Image 1 (cartoon, rainbow, N blue to C red):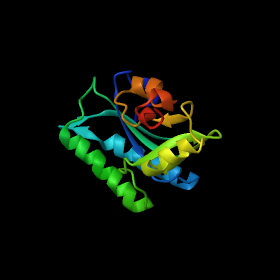
Image 2: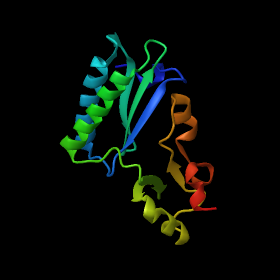
Image 3: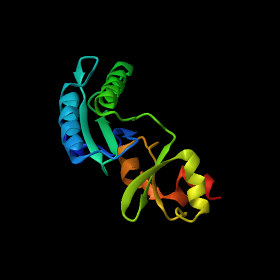
Image 4: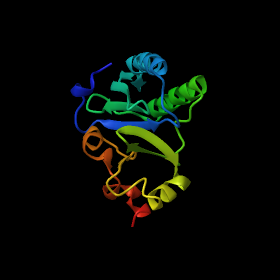
Amino acid sequence: MVHYSEMSAESRVWVYQSNREFTSTEIAEIRKKGEVFVNNWTAHKQELKACFDIYYNWFIVLIVDEEQAKASGCSIDKSIAFMKQLEKEYNINLFDRLNICYVKNEKVTSCKLADFEPLIEKGEISGSTFVFNNLIRTKEDMECNWRIPLKESWHKKFVD
């Protein structure tokens, strides 16, 4: 496994948001499994330069530096299968795009999309509340556009 700092700014990123916060035991176990996965991950029999980690106790992030080898359809399918395996093993959902994570009192929390607008109306969430834009595509996006104020994200349509 390659360290995050060794990945180029153009490295491809996939963010898998859990429907619940991971425990410290789960984080340790999932990190070990993720390391094994990326150490054996290939595309057309070529090793992928990849890293895997868990951020904020909610997000599994998989990164591939495609300068060495591009992630192919088959290799992406392998990563999805691995995530689905984690879902079953840890009783989580990593593919529910109707959950939104945001920062409240310096802690990441989540809600269903349907509950997001009422939280804004109650004043519990505002345009300056940090949200996570899991649609990012590169390491540079991750560093600049992942954790951003709601008023700068695609979520802003809920406050306009």
